[in-house]
Amino acid sequence: MIKVTFIDTQGASRALDAVDGQSLMDVAVSNRVPGIDADCGGSCACGTCHVMVAPEWLVKLPPAEDMENAMLEFVEPRTPGSRLSCQIKLSPALDGIVVTTPAGQH
Amino acid sequence: MTQAAVATPTTPSSLAYATPLADLDPSNPALFADFTMLDYFERLRREDPVHYCAKSAFGAYWSVTKFKDIMQVETHPEIYSSDSRSGGITIFDSNAAASLPMFIAMDPPRHDEQRKVVSPVVAPENLARLEAVIRERPAAALDALPVNEDFDWVSRVSINLTTQMLATLFDFPWQDRAQLSYWSDAATAVVGQGMIDSEEQRFGILMECAQYMTRLWNERLNSEPGNDLISMLAHDDRTRNMSPEEFLGNVILLIVGGNDTTRNSMTGSVLALNENADQYAKLAADPALIPSMISEAIRWQTPLAHMRRTATEDAVLGGKNIRKGDKVIMWYVSGNRDEEAIDQPNRFIIDRERVRQHLSFGFGIHRCVGNRLAEQQLRILWEELFKRWPKPMQIKVVGAPKRVPSPFVKGYESLMVRISA
Image (cartoon, rainbow over all chains, first blue to last red; front, side):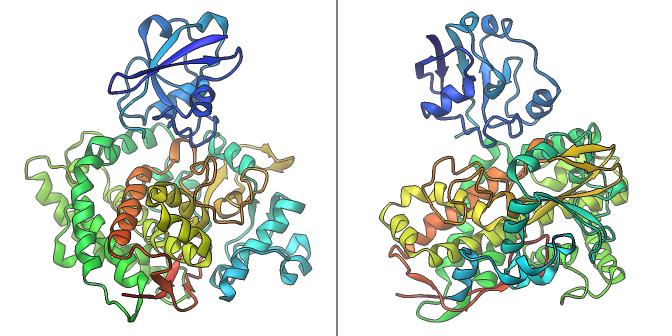
């Protein structure tokens, strides 16, 4: 089991269980985490699963590829920790990951 | 109503299936006027999902009809170009408006730069700021609607409200705001189908628009930066040096993008609820379903039937060999009815699972920049409608809709309704 935590703009946090190989977006959608719409269903094509990854976890992720960077151009607000959660594939190395959901997605 | 039967085909129309596959031309405007195109797309999805039409009024083109193939095109802008110089974003090659340079019809990196200038106007904090205005103006328009009397929903509600919204976004002179929808309609009308007789005529109307907007541009340029779209374009380093063509292109894009798309979803939502009385009753019993209903109505309506790309290199799509220079039409209207991607796609279900996963806003770098604003406008409209007329079927469609004869703008010229007291 891998633990992941989503924090909303009000500071409320939700800890959820995930499995190896699952995307962070999938965990959010399966548990109806507010703020993760995932309109394109995980094709890296809409920018509505935007999360801000805490710095200590950001360094453990592979860098964003071209398409993810292109979609991140349009998210609000883009921060150094901005990533698309559909592109974050969970593994035991990410057990405990903490991300914040932006106010703009509802 | 006969339209309801057509909208949810259970038996394939004979003509759609009698035509030899190679001769099938789903771009024929007549199919959109009489609403028989869904049968053609159903056949294509089943028999030839990536289909080549060698001869049509708009030249040779590929039809991409399945959700997953459309997503493939959307996410590969380096292969499937939107550039106006290679053909732009609609099936009409020669349309004077569609061939103008605008960011929807550009590829990276120019696209990214120009889009970023406009996107703050629809950023969350701006939408929150706009909420009161978006509610106040429609409320006044709705209060003025006749009751117990037939009237045209398209002109009295849909066109009226979207034009007001555009005027607000552009900080456009209020008394002249009808010009905005006139320019928008002129930009997208199919030649010979009523409004526009020639490209020269269209160009003349667009030049009027350019003149008017240039005057506003100069006024804004000489004033402090404001929150309206024209001021943003005039004061940002990335757009202040646009050529006159580029300025006109981007203005037309913002007018068309914010106009008949929302307009036709406003009309489409009334029609869909009327054709599906059980869903209207469900919504009346639980207005908290309005946001979900809005997403479903936007899928069901698909206000832009397609977007076009042009191949920049040879590619394989759905097993077919696309050649460099080929015109590729992504039929959103078909992908939104693809049974492999959407459960029971021909049914209008206001509380369906994953209701937001539709193609109407496009996907990838060209995804509709105003999608949240569109949803907000539609949500507020329905909240305000239910405040006044809360009973199911209280807004009743009383005649068959008159549809726009276009394979691009999928919408309505009129829809007669009656509100009962």
